[in-house]
Image (cartoon, rainbow, N blue to C red; front, side, top):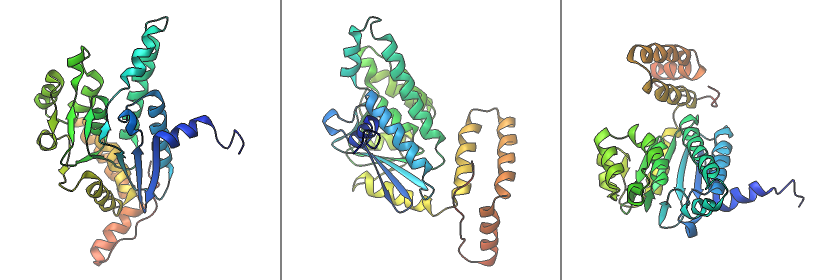
Length: 277
């Protein structure tokens, strides 16, 4: 095998993150249980690569993000970050690069054309909790735990706060960020961090949810997801103006014509491949 056929970045992606497909559902797995699936530089690279691959596969209509081992994700790799304190700048350049990589991945998830569902069994800490909040939906197993414990080590979880504050009620988000306490799956459900708690574990329910969504129009989902996040940041009048324009554009798509006709004719719709952007 030549070097071109097996570049180092692909090795990293295969080792740390795997990508599989179950029909129309892509399954991305954090695969470094020995590091508690910590978000090292290599892990960020691998996760970004596999998100891109999943997004570009035309048959993929929903994505599940899960993890191997007893920890969903332990957040940033503090050992890696501490090692860079010996750099000439005290680690500033590496810390900046790491936070940029983290922000890029979280925004990549939001910008994916397909819905992304987190399947959380075990602990999701700091940036790992941020990863859960960045996903469109989340399912927790009975032993899932969530925390943003930066305050316990003198480092407020400011970047996780971005995702948390956009998903949770403000006081719930601040309780997590200010106390650093560990919250269980039922707390996460009450806070709005997860959609469901499954007594049998998160993976099966997350996959079932993904399959349900995958049966809908991919064109409509792509239009809707993009509009949903964009209008959240807009003033009310602008949000309605934007959403109305999206509705018009969506109505002109083949799937809307087919879906409405199928409803009126009392038959199952036949959806087109995803091509809305």
